[in-house]
Length: 142
Image (tube, rainbow, N blue to C red; front, side):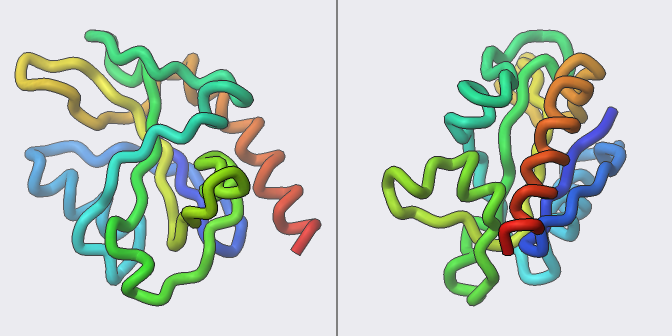
């Protein structure tokens, strides 16, 4: 199952969601977000759901809902703004900017709560083309 990475340079890439225990998964996710990332934050940006059509209803089917992971301490690391992440987060409405690389990941309801996972094919096929277009617009605008 896949996840989507969007960089501060408005580049988009697709990666396999890491397999293995939580410690291995967390290490890989932190590395994808950025080399200085020590803690990621789970974000549910409104435009990911309202404008792009992603699902926010977490169920027992892996990846049937999606969310965004960001560097929790990115502002302290003096990272560049993430234009696409900030757009999804509605920074234009409240002023809180998203910095650093962001990941769009899937979610699943497990016996212990909500876990991150790769996106379902349905969510990936819905969101990837729209996110690719957003990154292209952001590059063209820059």
